[in-house]
Length: 368
Image 1 (tube, helix red, strand yellow):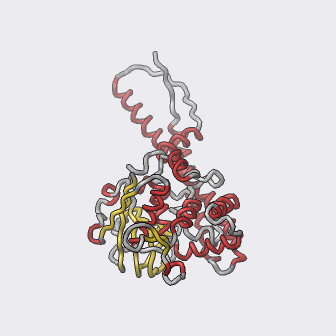
Image 2 (tube, rainbow, N blue to C red):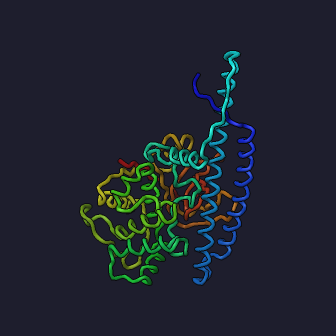
Image 3 (tube, helix red, strand yellow):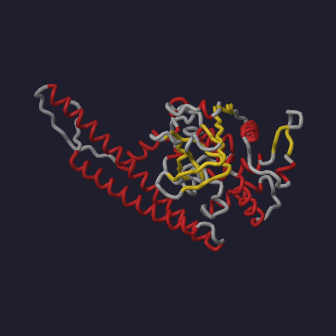
C-alpha cells in the first residue's frame, strides 16, 4: 500500500482566520504610520531622522502583512486541494484509507510560494504579478526617498558610494544636495528604473552581472530602487543627442537650470543609452492616448511596462488618502481600475489617474 497522509482542515481553517485577523491589524498599524509620516511632511530637516525611523518600521509591518497574506493564500490552497482529493477518493469506491499526519514547515511553504511568484520572468508576466508592486516595502521607486530620509543607514552609504564612482571628490553634504536635485526632477528616471526592475524579475543573477549590484538590497530586503536610480541619474542626467542627431552631448539649458527633468524624447534617449552602456537593449514605443488599450491592459502589455508623461492632472490615493495636482509628472502605469482610471506608481505609492485629464503621452518598454 502506498504512503498516505492527513491534513487537519479544521485546524488549518482556524489558522487562515487568524491570519486574516492579523492582516487587518497590520493594515491598521501601517495606516497609522502613514498618517503620522504624512503629518510630518517635509516641514523641517530636523524631522528627517524621525521620518526615516517611521518609514522603516512601516516597511517592516508591510512585509509582515504580505507574508501573512501569502501564507493565508497558501493554506487556503492546501485546504481546497485536499478537500477536492478527498471527495474524489470518497466518490471512487468503498476502499478504506488509513491516514497519518503530514508535517510541513510553514516557513518552507511560504518561501516556496514566494519563489514561485517572484521568479517568473518579468518579460512575460502581467504588471499585477510583478514584485515591484506587491506592497512589500514600496509600490515602485520614490525619487525623494534619499532626500527625505526614507532609507536605512547601510543603504544610504551604498548610494553615496554609487555617486562617488563618478564623482570621487564629492563629500556627503554635496551628494545630499544632489539627492535633493534628483528629487526635484527625478520622476522620469524613477519610472525608467521601475521598468528595468520589472524586466529583470526572476533574473537576479543576470541583473547583478549587468549592473554590478544585487537587484534586491541584502540590508533592507527590498528591491534596490534607490541604488539603481542613483546610478541611472548620475550617468544620464543632462545627456541629449548630438547636434545633428548622432553622438552625445550635455544639454546647456539643463546644466544652467533653465530646464530640468525629462520629456518623452530625452527619457527614451537616456534609458536606451543607459541600457546600452550595460550591454543590454530596450525598444521604447510612444503611443497616443487614444491608442492605449485600457480594456485589456494586462494582456496587451504583458511583459512590457508602460509609462505615462502627464501634464495638469490630479492623482488620487487608492486608499482614499489625499489627492495631488501635478503640472508635469512621469509614472509607470500598473493597471486599470474597474471605473476606467489608470493605476499608477508614483513616489513609491499607488495612485489613480483619469486618462482623460490633461495631456498624457504613453511609452511601452520592450526589454530584450
